[in-house]
Length: 573
Image (cartoon, rainbow, N blue to C red; front, side, top):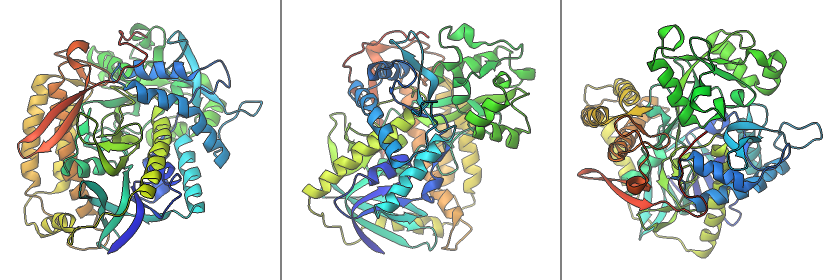
């Protein structure tokens, strides 16, 4: 099946929908693995960071400082400035589109404290997170989707992208499979934008939905495009014990306290100024240390989140989803009982490298691939550096989804069509044919479980050379087993076994880039913590990693960090 659009957006979360709204000069299609309002943006609970100053003095420069410091100075500061400057305007755009923000008594957008956000360059916490109870992401999805329907954006729901089409040095479209029919579609386009989300499902305990398997990154990597800073993966401190379902930082922003076996508020020892609202990488490591040193609850690998002192009224008004999750999944009443929590794989700082206009770049010289864009968690600007601040994910998808969409709109006006090769869908069809015709003995689900367990153990919150080297060898064995996989369901319609098998291949590729980057980076910075190299090493490692997939394996190149206003300093909270 052949379809022709001026622009094709892959992914219908906040970044994809925001980008679609900017493309006013041509026919636009959004391809989504899910129905749009089921995209993972809807799981974002806490809020959007923007220096509105509605409740106390605030400035975008303070927000930029927090972003750079929180990212352990690996942040490209030109991108961080754009993020924090344009956050304010973007929030007001959403308000004008009808997003139902929580309000102050005088009707302004309400704001609350969030981890790592400070006033006066780190002196004390500041109320910067704009929120809609604890359903902010859900409200963004609904608002942007409604606007897309109003603007006649075409949606192809439940389509899975298999290949990126590149012709004459330009991006020219994508190949996707329709899950409902099993039919291959070729989408011919002047511009393609990937907004496919993260890849937390490479880990066993994760806040990420089942769909977040890194499809966009895997497709780009297979086409020779590098992935940037893949060794940096954030673990959120408060996932529900064993399940990983996220309990937003908003709970701590409203006054929730982390406690160990003795009831101690242990963050007083690790971050005496910001306490439980220190950046996520620091809180997650502190929690692991408490467990390692025997202060886990009942000697197990979890701690307690205490919100009992907030009262039932505050919990039900300001944190309704969080409290409902706890009641539903744990059988616990958070107004009266302590909540078991553990760090959960949450957010990828790395991804497809882009510039500040959302253009995908293919080398250390930031050379763009014309017509190809990326935004949101699948992209790497790098605006989050080594560790993303809470609320900045929603800022990122909105600010840079908007910028990428606007640049793509200009691109499709200025450029003609590129002719597709006669068999443009050949690679995508070959993948399907190989898997559907395979007669191996391995099951994708078994291999996936092994991958997730091993990545959790050897490439999680704490890392060292021995475990990472073992993981490198494990991945070789896992890849060999994947080559023997069998898809037992030979049907074409809604073949979820086939889809999960395709996803697994990409997850293995992505895991390899993460492990190789983590092995190479002999320092601890942000979310990348090496037990054998416990200190940050700016002279040798103040640089970004680019991982290329080659016949010889993953090869790494490097490019410098852009520093404009804030020179690297020690992180103290």
